[in-house]
Amino acid sequence: MAETLSLEQLAAFDNLEFLARQVVEGFITGLHKSPYHGFSVEFSEHRIYNTGESTRNIDWKLYARTEKLFVKRYEEETNLRCQLVIDASGSMYFPNERQSKLRFSVYAAAALLHLFKKQRDAVGLSVFAQDLDVHLKARSSAAHHQLLLAELEKLLQSKTRERGTRAINALHEIAETAHPRSLVVVFSDMFEPGSHADALFAALQHLRHNKHEVLLFHVLHGPQEMELAYENRPHVFVDMETGQELKINPTSIQQAYRERIGQFRQELLLKCGQYRIDFVEADVNEGFNQVLQQYLMKRSRLV
Image (tube, rainbow, N blue to C red):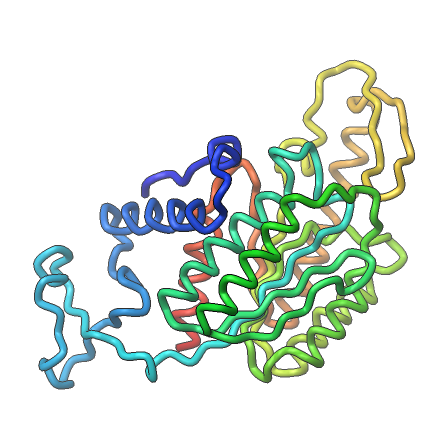
């Protein structure tokens, strides 16, 4: 499958809508060239032909390109509602502005927004840090899509850094106020103070209890955050949510760090499994195909 553009390459674009279109079109090109091109290849305009139904709406031009049967899909056939949720707390700005987890999440959300527009699905946007800063309910109009893009642009321009995470209250509020039976797509590193872990898991469970489908993208810089992969020399580490500094040689704590974060990952994975939440590790260094493909797989099970 073709690779999507990197964060560094995408940062050169100053138009988020154009950027999102480039990401999606690159992904679609990869689908056509891969063994997986059979699912949702033309998104809203087509669906796979079911044996026995009328052949009147088969797209024969698409069949000539893909050697698979698709029928034209009409607007009334799509009714998915999705709530995009982005964690904008301080830790999401790691490691720097151009390569941050927040920038990755915004670009990924914009690409999904482009898919929602093509699929005629309704979409909303929620952004949280210490509070639920943005909460726009799902709609499908062109004006609403432009409003969401504008909010995503604001996130890219935000200079706020040292803000703690309080995902718990935000997720509870989203669970109660999102359109019933929505698909809730969360982008977060899930870094919550240790004493609040159980409350965070309860908030995720609340989303499922209220009949929402949940797709959680656990956004991380893999080598640095999962492995503490730094040179064997003293470094100054800065807590991006409090500003507290710690000077230490990472190799002296590397083993204990890996064990601790590995335990957290396993607990998060276990809880998501128990609550039937789709958990996806989204490494910023691996591009956007991982996000788009997981979303399409999830959508194909819902529609």
